[in-house]
Length: 197
Image (cartoon, rainbow, N blue to C red):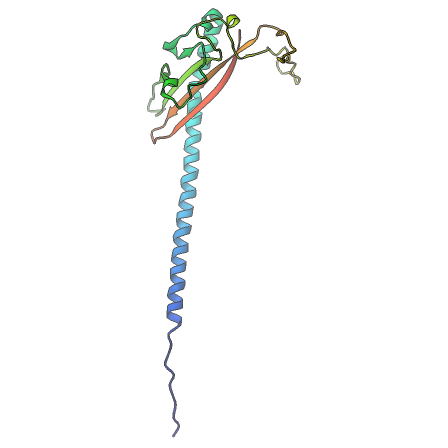
């Protein structure tokens, strides 16, 4: 008679498989969250780009206002027109994030086609308000005498040794537009326009 001894089974495979399943479950959850956050980030970037393009409508409206006002009279550019969002000076201590910066802002009414609230303000880059640039300290650039489409820009240096402009200097006008989106987005765009003084 042969006597067979049976070994007691250890059952190692089951705990190993359970651990592997837990690891696979955790990594699949991580991959799902990672792909979700990538999708959300891409959607947010597209939304911000859409807001930025819509804010350009405010920049365009302000630029058209400056063009019309500057062709009428150069003296008109030296005086505030707060009802239309124009200030003849620029206070560098007031930041775009301050509510005082937007006190005289013009609001473009939102429509169903444009479900945003757009505001813009314009500042002449001068120190003193309601004063002509001759008696003021303004940011100025010499006019470029190069013909339109010319590959060479022939500006004149405004260094200390340069005493005068080639022609009437161009004054800097800072246009700032901001937009609030329906989902809580907020974008601020700025541009500088140069207009003959």
